Picture 1 (tube, rainbow, N blue to C red):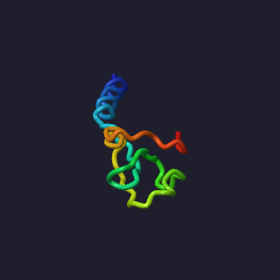
Picture 2: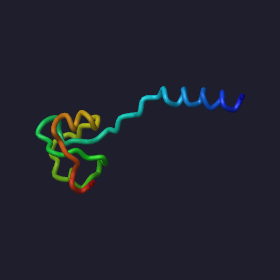
Picture 3: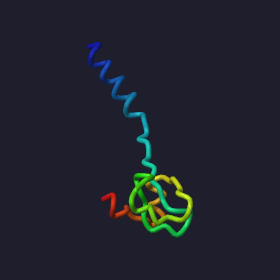
Picture 4: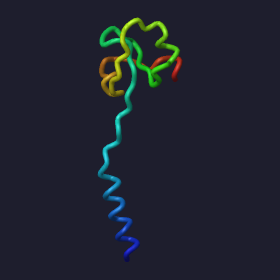
Length: 71
């Protein structure tokens, strides 16, 4: 009885957490075509703008796709 109650409480507690959204890097606030998981990705070597850290869903909303060096 106590074991099943503990499992139920644990399940409710763990299921209440929202998953953290991944952050990605893009080259500058505008004009980027790809997003990158790593700040030091080889695909960012040509970036002449400031790196911007955004959420994955935001980058995908901009129409960006994953860098070919990271897929």
